[in-house]
Length: 435
Image 1 (tube, rainbow, N blue to C red):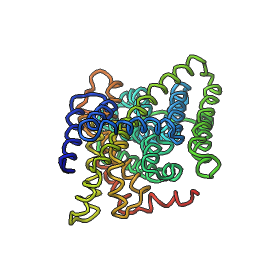
Image 2: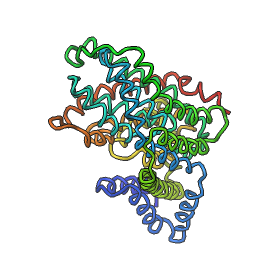
Image 3: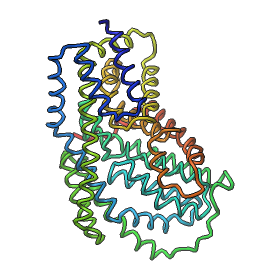
Protein backbone atom coordinates (compact mmCIF):
# COMPACT_ATOMS: atom_id res chain seq x y z
CA UNK A 1 0.00 0.00 0.00
CA UNK A 2 1.33 3.47 -0.89
CA UNK A 3 2.48 5.75 1.96
CA UNK A 4 0.09 8.49 0.76
CA UNK A 5 -2.88 6.15 1.09
CA UNK A 6 -1.68 5.14 4.56
CA UNK A 7 -1.59 8.84 5.55
CA UNK A 8 -5.16 9.32 4.30
CA UNK A 9 -6.44 6.23 6.12
CA UNK A 10 -4.73 7.09 9.41
CA UNK A 11 -5.70 10.76 9.56
CA UNK A 12 -9.10 10.19 7.96
CA UNK A 13 -9.93 7.37 10.36
CA UNK A 14 -8.78 9.41 13.34
CA UNK A 15 -10.85 12.43 12.31
CA UNK A 16 -13.95 10.34 11.64
CA UNK A 17 -13.78 8.57 15.01
CA UNK A 18 -13.12 11.79 16.94
CA UNK A 19 -16.19 13.40 15.37
CA UNK A 20 -18.32 10.57 16.84
CA UNK A 21 -17.44 11.83 20.33
CA UNK A 22 -15.71 8.64 21.45
CA UNK A 23 -13.02 9.10 24.16
CA UNK A 24 -9.71 10.03 22.52
CA UNK A 25 -7.77 7.34 24.44
CA UNK A 26 -9.93 4.54 23.02
CA UNK A 27 -10.01 6.11 19.56
CA UNK A 28 -6.21 6.13 19.41
CA UNK A 29 -5.72 2.68 20.93
CA UNK A 30 -8.53 1.00 18.97
CA UNK A 31 -7.51 2.57 15.65
CA UNK A 32 -3.88 1.56 16.25
CA UNK A 33 -4.89 -2.05 16.87
CA UNK A 34 -7.17 -2.12 13.82
CA UNK A 35 -4.54 -0.63 11.49
CA UNK A 36 -1.82 -2.92 12.82
CA UNK A 37 -3.87 -6.03 12.03
CA UNK A 38 -5.22 -4.88 8.66
CA UNK A 39 -2.38 -2.82 7.17
CA UNK A 40 0.71 -4.25 8.78
CA UNK A 41 1.07 -7.66 10.40
CA UNK A 42 -0.93 -9.23 13.26
CA UNK A 43 2.36 -10.22 14.87
CA UNK A 44 3.21 -6.51 15.13
CA UNK A 45 0.59 -6.15 17.90
CA UNK A 46 3.54 -6.77 20.25
CA UNK A 47 4.56 -3.16 19.49
CA UNK A 48 1.36 -1.93 21.16
CA UNK A 49 2.10 -4.05 24.23
CA UNK A 50 5.63 -2.64 24.41
CA UNK A 51 4.21 0.91 24.34
CA UNK A 52 2.14 0.08 27.42
CA UNK A 53 5.21 -1.11 29.34
CA UNK A 54 7.27 1.84 28.13
CA UNK A 55 4.66 4.29 29.44
CA UNK A 56 4.25 2.56 32.78
CA UNK A 57 8.03 2.53 33.40
CA UNK A 58 8.54 6.21 32.55
CA UNK A 59 10.04 7.91 35.62
CA UNK A 60 9.55 11.48 34.31
CA UNK A 61 5.79 10.83 34.00
CA UNK A 62 5.74 10.16 37.74
CA UNK A 63 5.68 13.95 38.22
CA UNK A 64 2.22 14.16 36.59
CA UNK A 65 0.15 12.47 39.35
CA UNK A 66 2.20 14.26 42.02
CA UNK A 67 1.44 17.72 40.61
CA UNK A 68 -2.23 16.79 40.16
CA UNK A 69 -2.37 15.57 43.76
CA UNK A 70 -0.79 18.84 44.93
CA UNK A 71 -3.44 20.82 43.01
CA UNK A 72 -6.25 18.66 44.41
CA UNK A 73 -5.08 19.16 48.01
CA UNK A 74 -4.66 22.92 47.54
CA UNK A 75 -8.19 23.19 46.13
CA UNK A 76 -9.47 21.94 49.47
CA UNK A 77 -7.07 23.93 51.70
CA UNK A 78 -8.73 27.38 51.53
CA UNK A 79 -5.51 29.00 50.24
CA UNK A 80 -7.19 30.34 47.10
CA UNK A 81 -10.04 32.00 49.07
CA UNK A 82 -7.46 33.75 51.26
CA UNK A 83 -5.57 34.97 48.20
CA UNK A 84 -8.72 36.44 46.69
CA UNK A 85 -9.48 38.35 49.89
CA UNK A 86 -5.94 39.78 49.83
CA UNK A 87 -6.32 40.92 46.22
CA UNK A 88 -9.67 42.51 47.08
CA UNK A 89 -8.04 44.57 49.85
CA UNK A 90 -5.06 45.68 47.76
CA UNK A 91 -6.71 46.25 44.38
CA UNK A 92 -10.37 46.80 45.28
CA UNK A 93 -10.26 50.61 44.92
CA UNK A 94 -8.26 50.59 41.66
CA UNK A 95 -10.42 50.87 38.55
CA UNK A 96 -10.45 47.35 37.14
CA UNK A 97 -8.67 46.21 40.30
CA UNK A 98 -10.69 43.05 40.87
CA UNK A 99 -10.03 41.88 37.31
CA UNK A 100 -6.31 42.65 37.72
CA UNK A 101 -6.32 40.81 41.05
CA UNK A 102 -7.95 37.82 39.34
CA UNK A 103 -5.14 37.68 36.78
CA UNK A 104 -2.52 37.83 39.55
CA UNK A 105 -4.25 35.06 41.52
CA UNK A 106 -4.37 32.90 38.39
CA UNK A 107 -0.60 33.43 37.97
CA UNK A 108 -0.06 32.30 41.57
CA UNK A 109 -2.41 29.33 41.13
CA UNK A 110 -0.60 28.35 37.95
CA UNK A 111 2.73 28.47 39.79
CA UNK A 112 1.31 26.33 42.60
CA UNK A 113 -0.73 23.75 40.70
CA UNK A 114 -0.30 23.91 36.91
CA UNK A 115 -3.89 22.74 36.37
CA UNK A 116 -6.18 24.86 34.15
CA UNK A 117 -9.54 23.53 35.29
CA UNK A 118 -8.83 24.35 38.94
CA UNK A 119 -8.04 28.01 38.19
CA UNK A 120 -11.00 28.67 35.88
CA UNK A 121 -13.51 26.94 38.14
CA UNK A 122 -12.18 28.54 41.34
CA UNK A 123 -12.23 32.04 39.88
CA UNK A 124 -15.67 31.40 38.41
CA UNK A 125 -16.95 30.62 41.90
CA UNK A 126 -14.99 33.28 43.84
CA UNK A 127 -14.28 36.21 41.53
CA UNK A 128 -17.19 36.27 39.10
CA UNK A 129 -20.04 36.96 41.60
CA UNK A 130 -18.06 39.77 43.26
CA UNK A 131 -17.14 41.47 39.98
CA UNK A 132 -20.70 41.20 38.67
CA UNK A 133 -22.02 42.60 41.96
CA UNK A 134 -19.78 45.64 41.46
CA UNK A 135 -21.18 46.12 37.93
CA UNK A 136 -18.20 44.92 35.88
CA UNK A 137 -19.14 44.16 32.27
CA UNK A 138 -20.08 40.44 32.17
CA UNK A 139 -18.11 39.80 28.97
CA UNK A 140 -14.95 41.33 30.49
CA UNK A 141 -15.40 39.21 33.62
CA UNK A 142 -15.81 36.00 31.60
CA UNK A 143 -12.91 36.79 29.26
CA UNK A 144 -10.56 37.64 32.12
CA UNK A 145 -11.30 34.43 34.02
CA UNK A 146 -11.10 32.16 30.97
CA UNK A 147 -7.86 33.69 29.65
CA UNK A 148 -6.06 34.07 32.98
CA UNK A 149 -7.13 30.59 34.05
CA UNK A 150 -5.30 29.04 31.09
CA UNK A 151 -1.95 30.41 32.30
CA UNK A 152 -1.51 27.04 34.00
CA UNK A 153 -0.78 25.60 30.54
CA UNK A 154 2.39 27.71 30.37
CA UNK A 155 3.59 28.71 33.83
CA UNK A 156 5.42 25.92 35.71
CA UNK A 157 4.76 23.44 37.17
CA UNK A 158 2.61 22.75 34.12
CA UNK A 159 1.50 19.16 33.60
CA UNK A 160 1.29 19.89 29.87
CA UNK A 161 4.91 21.05 29.84
CA UNK A 162 6.07 17.86 31.53
CA UNK A 163 4.21 15.66 29.04
CA UNK A 164 5.64 17.70 26.15
CA UNK A 165 9.19 17.37 27.51
CA UNK A 166 8.82 13.60 27.97
CA UNK A 167 7.33 13.19 24.49
CA UNK A 168 9.91 15.45 22.81
CA UNK A 169 12.74 13.98 24.93
CA UNK A 170 14.03 17.38 26.07
CA UNK A 171 15.03 18.52 29.56
CA UNK A 172 11.95 18.77 31.79
CA UNK A 173 13.69 21.32 34.02
CA UNK A 174 14.58 23.62 31.12
CA UNK A 175 11.13 23.21 29.60
CA UNK A 176 9.44 24.18 32.87
CA UNK A 177 11.67 27.22 33.42
CA UNK A 178 11.15 28.32 29.79
CA UNK A 179 7.48 29.05 30.53
CA UNK A 180 8.13 31.59 33.29
CA UNK A 181 8.98 34.71 31.24
CA UNK A 182 6.35 34.10 28.51
CA UNK A 183 3.77 33.39 31.23
CA UNK A 184 4.54 36.67 33.01
CA UNK A 185 4.54 38.46 29.63
CA UNK A 186 1.08 37.10 28.84
CA UNK A 187 -0.28 38.04 32.29
CA UNK A 188 1.18 41.56 31.90
CA UNK A 189 -0.51 41.95 28.51
CA UNK A 190 -3.83 40.94 30.11
CA UNK A 191 -3.38 43.51 32.88
CA UNK A 192 -2.50 46.29 30.40
CA UNK A 193 -5.61 45.43 28.38
CA UNK A 194 -7.80 45.53 31.52
CA UNK A 195 -6.35 48.95 32.43
CA UNK A 196 -7.02 50.21 28.90
CA UNK A 197 -10.64 49.00 29.03
CA UNK A 198 -11.08 50.44 32.54
CA UNK A 199 -9.97 53.96 31.63
CA UNK A 200 -10.87 54.28 27.93
CA UNK A 201 -14.02 52.15 27.50
CA UNK A 202 -16.74 53.79 29.60
CA UNK A 203 -19.27 51.44 31.13
CA UNK A 204 -17.08 48.35 31.05
CA UNK A 205 -15.68 48.84 34.56
CA UNK A 206 -17.31 50.82 37.41
CA UNK A 207 -15.68 53.77 39.10
CA UNK A 208 -15.05 52.19 42.49
CA UNK A 209 -16.52 53.82 45.58
CA UNK A 210 -15.13 51.31 48.07
CA UNK A 211 -14.07 52.69 51.42
CA UNK A 212 -10.28 53.07 51.90
CA UNK A 213 -8.62 50.14 53.66
CA UNK A 214 -6.07 51.04 56.36
CA UNK A 215 -2.51 50.12 55.41
CA UNK A 216 -2.19 48.12 58.63
CA UNK A 217 -4.97 45.76 57.48
CA UNK A 218 -3.42 45.47 54.04
CA UNK A 219 -0.07 44.50 55.50
CA UNK A 220 -1.66 42.02 57.90
CA UNK A 221 -3.53 40.42 54.99
CA UNK A 222 -0.20 39.57 53.34
CA UNK A 223 0.12 36.68 55.79
CA UNK A 224 -2.11 34.77 53.38
CA UNK A 225 0.56 35.11 50.68
CA UNK A 226 3.26 33.38 52.75
CA UNK A 227 2.07 29.81 52.14
CA UNK A 228 1.67 30.17 48.34
CA UNK A 229 5.04 31.96 48.12
CA UNK A 230 6.78 29.19 50.08
CA UNK A 231 5.21 26.52 47.86
CA UNK A 232 6.35 28.29 44.70
CA UNK A 233 9.88 28.72 46.07
CA UNK A 234 10.01 25.07 47.17
CA UNK A 235 8.88 23.70 43.82
CA UNK A 236 10.34 26.10 41.25
CA UNK A 237 13.33 27.16 43.33
CA UNK A 238 14.49 23.57 43.84
CA UNK A 239 14.28 22.95 40.07
CA UNK A 240 15.96 26.22 39.09
CA UNK A 241 18.82 25.77 41.58
CA UNK A 242 19.35 22.16 40.57
CA UNK A 243 18.57 20.88 44.07
CA UNK A 244 15.81 18.54 42.88
CA UNK A 245 14.58 17.02 39.66
CA UNK A 246 11.06 18.03 38.53
CA UNK A 247 9.71 14.74 39.88
CA UNK A 248 11.38 15.27 43.27
CA UNK A 249 10.15 18.86 43.31
CA UNK A 250 6.61 17.56 42.70
CA UNK A 251 6.91 15.32 45.76
CA UNK A 252 8.10 18.32 47.79
CA UNK A 253 5.07 20.25 46.52
CA UNK A 254 2.69 17.52 47.70
CA UNK A 255 4.20 17.62 51.20
CA UNK A 256 4.01 21.43 51.13
CA UNK A 257 0.34 21.38 50.13
CA UNK A 258 -0.46 18.98 53.01
CA UNK A 259 1.36 21.30 55.43
CA UNK A 260 -0.59 24.23 53.97
CA UNK A 261 -3.84 22.39 54.73
CA UNK A 262 -2.66 21.81 58.30
CA UNK A 263 -1.71 25.49 58.68
CA UNK A 264 -5.16 26.56 57.46
CA UNK A 265 -6.90 24.08 59.75
CA UNK A 266 -8.53 22.43 56.71
CA UNK A 267 -6.71 19.11 56.71
CA UNK A 268 -8.76 15.95 57.10
CA UNK A 269 -8.29 12.39 55.95
CA UNK A 270 -11.56 12.68 54.03
CA UNK A 271 -10.19 15.64 52.05
CA UNK A 272 -6.96 13.73 51.44
CA UNK A 273 -8.91 10.68 50.25
CA UNK A 274 -11.05 12.84 47.94
CA UNK A 275 -7.91 14.46 46.53
CA UNK A 276 -6.40 11.02 45.99
CA UNK A 277 -9.48 9.75 44.13
CA UNK A 278 -9.55 12.86 41.94
CA UNK A 279 -5.84 12.39 41.19
CA UNK A 280 -6.40 8.73 40.33
CA UNK A 281 -9.17 9.60 37.86
CA UNK A 282 -7.22 12.36 36.11
CA UNK A 283 -3.94 10.41 36.02
CA UNK A 284 -5.66 7.31 34.65
CA UNK A 285 -7.17 9.38 31.86
CA UNK A 286 -3.79 10.91 31.02
CA UNK A 287 -2.00 7.55 31.00
CA UNK A 288 -4.65 5.88 28.83
CA UNK A 289 -4.32 8.74 26.34
CA UNK A 290 -0.52 8.39 26.53
CA UNK A 291 -0.67 4.67 25.79
CA UNK A 292 -3.11 5.13 22.91
CA UNK A 293 -1.14 8.01 21.38
CA UNK A 294 2.22 6.24 21.64
CA UNK A 295 0.72 3.16 19.99
CA UNK A 296 -0.78 5.29 17.20
CA UNK A 297 2.51 7.09 16.56
CA UNK A 298 4.45 3.80 16.59
CA UNK A 299 2.14 2.36 13.91
CA UNK A 300 2.18 5.63 11.97
CA UNK A 301 5.98 5.60 11.92
CA UNK A 302 6.26 1.87 11.23
CA UNK A 303 3.99 2.09 8.18
CA UNK A 304 6.12 4.91 6.76
CA UNK A 305 3.65 7.72 7.37
CA UNK A 306 6.12 9.91 9.27
CA UNK A 307 8.80 9.70 6.56
CA UNK A 308 6.25 10.47 3.86
CA UNK A 309 4.91 13.52 5.70
CA UNK A 310 8.36 14.95 6.49
CA UNK A 311 9.51 14.37 2.91
CA UNK A 312 6.44 16.14 1.52
CA UNK A 313 7.00 19.17 3.78
CA UNK A 314 10.71 19.33 2.94
CA UNK A 315 9.84 19.35 -0.76
CA UNK A 316 7.61 22.38 -0.31
CA UNK A 317 9.28 25.56 -1.51
CA UNK A 318 8.04 27.75 1.36
CA UNK A 319 9.56 29.68 4.24
CA UNK A 320 9.99 27.50 7.37
CA UNK A 321 8.02 30.08 9.36
CA UNK A 322 5.03 29.50 7.09
CA UNK A 323 5.12 25.80 8.04
CA UNK A 324 5.49 26.82 11.70
CA UNK A 325 2.43 29.07 11.40
CA UNK A 326 0.42 26.21 9.87
CA UNK A 327 1.40 23.94 12.78
CA UNK A 328 0.29 26.61 15.26
CA UNK A 329 -3.06 26.97 13.49
CA UNK A 330 -3.55 23.20 13.65
CA UNK A 331 -2.85 23.29 17.40
CA UNK A 332 -5.31 26.14 17.94
CA UNK A 333 -7.99 24.18 16.09
CA UNK A 334 -7.26 20.97 18.01
CA UNK A 335 -7.38 22.93 21.27
CA UNK A 336 -11.09 23.53 20.70
CA UNK A 337 -11.97 19.84 20.60
CA UNK A 338 -9.23 17.85 22.38
CA UNK A 339 -7.60 18.05 25.79
CA UNK A 340 -4.02 19.31 25.87
CA UNK A 341 -2.46 15.93 26.75
CA UNK A 342 -4.09 14.28 23.76
CA UNK A 343 -2.92 17.10 21.48
CA UNK A 344 0.69 16.79 22.63
CA UNK A 345 0.89 13.03 22.38
CA UNK A 346 -0.81 13.05 19.01
CA UNK A 347 1.08 15.88 17.31
CA UNK A 348 4.53 16.24 18.91
CA UNK A 349 5.94 13.03 17.37
CA UNK A 350 4.70 14.25 13.96
CA UNK A 351 5.73 17.91 14.33
CA UNK A 352 9.06 17.51 16.08
CA UNK A 353 11.00 15.92 13.18
CA UNK A 354 9.82 18.86 11.03
CA UNK A 355 10.96 21.32 13.72
CA UNK A 356 14.39 19.66 13.85
CA UNK A 357 14.65 19.57 10.05
CA UNK A 358 14.17 23.36 9.96
CA UNK A 359 16.70 23.88 12.77
CA UNK A 360 14.22 25.35 15.27
CA UNK A 361 14.93 25.08 19.00
CA UNK A 362 12.72 22.40 20.63
CA UNK A 363 12.37 24.30 23.91
CA UNK A 364 11.33 27.46 22.05
CA UNK A 365 8.89 25.45 19.93
CA UNK A 366 7.46 23.89 23.10
CA UNK A 367 6.52 27.31 24.49
CA UNK A 368 4.93 28.36 21.17
CA UNK A 369 3.11 25.04 21.35
CA UNK A 370 1.75 25.83 24.83
CA UNK A 371 0.59 29.33 23.87
CA UNK A 372 -1.17 27.96 20.78
CA UNK A 373 -3.01 25.41 22.92
CA UNK A 374 -4.01 28.27 25.26
CA UNK A 375 -5.60 30.06 22.31
CA UNK A 376 -7.49 26.89 21.45
CA UNK A 377 -8.61 26.54 25.06
CA UNK A 378 -10.62 29.77 24.90
CA UNK A 379 -11.64 29.61 21.22
CA UNK A 380 -15.43 29.54 20.66
CA UNK A 381 -17.47 27.48 20.43
CA UNK A 382 -15.80 24.40 21.95
CA UNK A 383 -12.75 25.65 23.91
CA UNK A 384 -12.31 23.65 27.11
CA UNK A 385 -12.06 26.70 29.39
CA UNK A 386 -15.41 27.96 28.12
CA UNK A 387 -17.09 24.84 29.44
CA UNK A 388 -15.18 24.97 32.73
CA UNK A 389 -16.61 28.46 33.21
CA UNK A 390 -20.07 27.54 31.96
CA UNK A 391 -20.63 25.40 35.05
CA UNK A 392 -20.19 28.49 37.28
CA UNK A 393 -22.25 31.05 35.30
CA UNK A 394 -24.98 32.80 37.31
CA UNK A 395 -28.60 32.95 36.15
CA UNK A 396 -29.15 35.47 33.41
CA UNK A 397 -25.64 35.17 31.98
CA UNK A 398 -25.27 33.05 28.87
CA UNK A 399 -22.49 31.74 26.67
CA UNK A 400 -22.93 34.66 24.24
CA UNK A 401 -21.30 36.98 26.81
CA UNK A 402 -18.51 34.45 27.36
CA UNK A 403 -17.81 34.24 23.62
CA UNK A 404 -17.72 38.04 23.32
CA UNK A 405 -15.45 38.28 26.33
CA UNK A 406 -12.80 35.81 25.20
CA UNK A 407 -12.44 37.21 21.67
CA UNK A 408 -10.11 40.13 22.56
CA UNK A 409 -8.10 37.87 24.87
CA UNK A 410 -7.55 35.47 21.98
CA UNK A 411 -6.02 38.40 20.12
CA UNK A 412 -3.76 39.13 23.11
CA UNK A 413 -2.61 35.50 23.21
CA UNK A 414 -1.80 35.59 19.50
CA UNK A 415 0.15 38.83 20.14
CA UNK A 416 2.19 37.04 22.84
CA UNK A 417 2.71 34.12 20.45
CA UNK A 418 4.08 36.48 17.78
CA UNK A 419 6.39 38.19 20.30
CA UNK A 420 7.84 34.85 21.43
CA UNK A 421 8.19 33.69 17.81
CA UNK A 422 9.91 36.90 16.71
CA UNK A 423 12.18 37.12 19.77
CA UNK A 424 13.23 33.57 20.78
CA UNK A 425 15.42 34.97 23.58
CA UNK A 426 12.22 35.72 25.53
CA UNK A 427 11.85 31.94 25.82
CA UNK A 428 15.43 30.63 25.77
CA UNK A 429 17.19 33.16 28.03
CA UNK A 430 16.11 31.83 31.44
CA UNK A 431 16.51 28.08 30.67
CA UNK A 432 20.13 28.85 29.77
CA UNK A 433 20.88 29.20 33.49
CA UNK A 434 19.56 25.70 34.28
CA UNK A 435 22.14 22.93 34.18
